[in-house]
Length: 100
Figure (cartoon, helix red, strand yellow):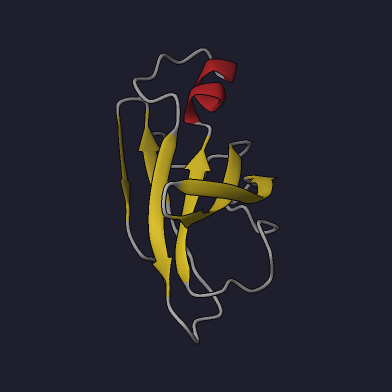
């Protein structure tokens, strides 16, 4: 929305198996808009979920938003040791892609 990284968004990482999701870690985005300490350091192959607390982020800035949170499910492949899951955000839209 502002063209700047979103500092201060709470992020959670979940492991998804069937209908169950177990929270693995939480973090907050830094001044570069990244949750660098969102671990663990390695993920087993499978389905994972990352949630961004976008409603809290916008509320703290006095900005109305349509999305109280953004949830992204993704698949971890065997042998991949790093994933970058960006979320480009505005109060009324978001997009994501598989980063490098």
